[in-house]
Length: 320
Image (cartoon, rainbow, N blue to C red; front, side):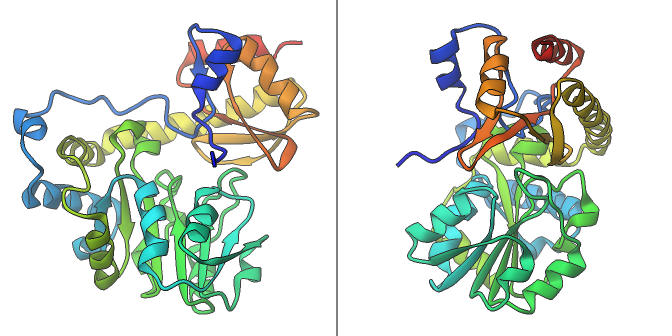
């Protein structure tokens, strides 16, 4: 059965016609890191242990942890699919509403899954899953609060896919032994097509994940681009600054259009509208694609426009 996701631009084009679309239905940075030409071996040869080690060194510095605690994977999504099968099934509590792949992957692996409205409701679970900051509402929890939660559950998974601009939220520097942190590369660096992400955990659990993922789980170009991009501190600083300012501007436009900000992160904002379907369709007629949710007829989520032209088009589309 198909699962609800953003990024379904094909459906928008089929319904509202082809053209110059602005896809704001995801939280992927629309100002991607500029990919340079890669050495020929990145394309022609299988990735080597040295290729992976270079990325791990850079990623560990960015994530503020030891190299032995980091495993590159084919996107955070790969870890979301594999972890439920590596861990022994039991009772899982998943923060809700949140990214729907966590609950779906757990159920597919035989876990008994319950929805938790907040982390206090997770106590006693064999496995707890928290997205921090949360998708789609941007709720956030301090490392101290998550460390305390780790002491009250069997295993804690924290999905930090939107945390790169917020190192203060990360559990990684003081990671409890029974915790796993997931990171997405594609969202902040704007290169989702690479399918690159990371699991951060104790070494024995990473070894089990590596075994389950199989050989050459991450492509050579992804290893090379990831290492170069994550070492580019100047680009990262500029990206954080742009998105912090642009998110405020997006809130301003939304308020002017009669929407109420509900929350969000540096990479997306969530709004309460009078009718999410009508709001989405009005923007789609201007070839701006957004994300609504099956569990709310009022919430609409927008990624951050990538430049002045995109903001101008969105502003025009929001006018009555």
